[in-house]
Length: 623
Ligand SMILES: NC(=O)c1ccc[n+]([C@@H]2O[C@H](COP(=O)([O-])OP(=O)(O)OC[C@H]3O[C@@H](n4cnc5c(N)ncnc54)[C@H](O)[C@@H]3O)[C@@H](O)[C@H]2O)c1
Image (tube, rainbow, N blue to C red):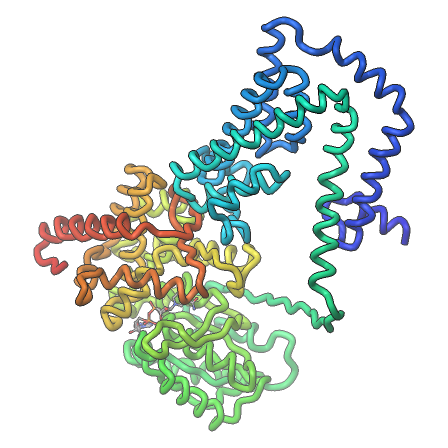
């Protein structure tokens, strides 16, 4: 038990209950070493005079060293209060003041620049561009920026967080410069006094132990305040593991892909009910019969409860009425939790059938067979399901992973050209935020993709699905409890445009417009370079997206853009705190928590005028 305790104490991420032991051990060690070696330390300090810089050149070098240490405090564990006091001891009150002030200012600016991603390579190395500003950013205001300047750790965290959330730069410079001037004055005054009192040794000891005791006292205070009574605690973990398979001609007699998934780990006959997109069935009149004969060939293991049931398709099918009908069908066919539902269709059908499965009997087994590009590379891969309600997209829904997802590329051949292209918007999106090499590949293959060339489209769908899956399962927030959602790049405007068009626009088409709009905004903000913005606009145009739908120009009675009202709706959808993913280069994004309405309006106008110019060449834009 003792070994476990010590391992916890010494490990970087020991359990919380070992925190106190760590603090006490640290304090005892420091105090004991001072008591045991008091004489030696006194002698050393007495000799320090010998090491104090004598010549101007030595003083200059020391000043540079102190400035560098204070400036790099944001990336290195520098005990800044100790460095500042030593600077005063060595350089005197005025010299120390100047050096501390410059070092603190440089440190604050460096922190801001790193948080804002100005030094991409360094920020990338430190992982700062991917981090979220965290809880601190929600409360970060001018007052907290000032107050935190002198607090160890929080001082550095606050400036990085300010950069991440793009705290206005000019205000940041003014606020931190003034606060640093005050802090440097305090250090210089305290340092001069202690030197005069010959109490530097005590100060060094205090600057080591006091921060530890301060943190310990604070955590004790929090515990005492929080726990008037021990709460009962329920805690368990559920893990999900589902394959995303790629195949061709799923219901050919020799294809065993679906059979393997339905019978994995099962004894006895498995009952299956199929809901299929009505357009899919309409465009493939042979499909229903083919499915039935495939099940008949596997009758020993599988029982198809009824011929595939056609479900109204498209966005307008994500309604409470359709949901009721799905429940009715499941009930009439006597489904229980051991039965399987196969959802076969586009993203809209997968969303509504998925929601029905998540809630019927509190969860019934589901296998998704996506039949559009967008469903195969995005909607079918993830864990979200839902329907539209009260005029809001995806208002009701559930996080409910499927047992398996099977992508049959042949199903896509009956898709209209419009839907073949629309689904590529999600591939562009995920390349933009995650994978520059994939984006480059799409640029090279743009003509092949626009013509739905099989090899190119297959690769794009697979890579897009892979990137989505990696984010959903690997980013630590599959059920979207946090606010940061890079996969929602371009989506705030897309959701609004879909609604404004009364779903005339496909989801993918609206996402393409949303990405272009946010790209121009990031460009206006100085986040995305001109060249990269052009690459984004160019790829979307080459794939065949209309970036200037008429809904872009709609205004309310007060003359406000209706699309921009979508920002407020998105904020409400997120639960109060706005978090909009924005590109800071191709292949990477950051979250913004504030949007400048004026700049966004300018981006909207720029997009409308670019779209008008492009379409005027082909005739007929109605912005
Ligand atoms: N759950 C998620 O994680 C997620 C992610 C992205 C998008 N979505 C949702 O997905 C929906 C968009 O999906 P979509 O683009 O697939 O649109 P969709 O489901 O509306 O399908 C588009 C059209 O294609 C038809 N269709 C489907 N398969 C066909 C086929 N093989 N042959 C011929 N016609 C076919 C449909 O009937 C429909 O008319 C939106 O509702 C969006 O909100 C969900």
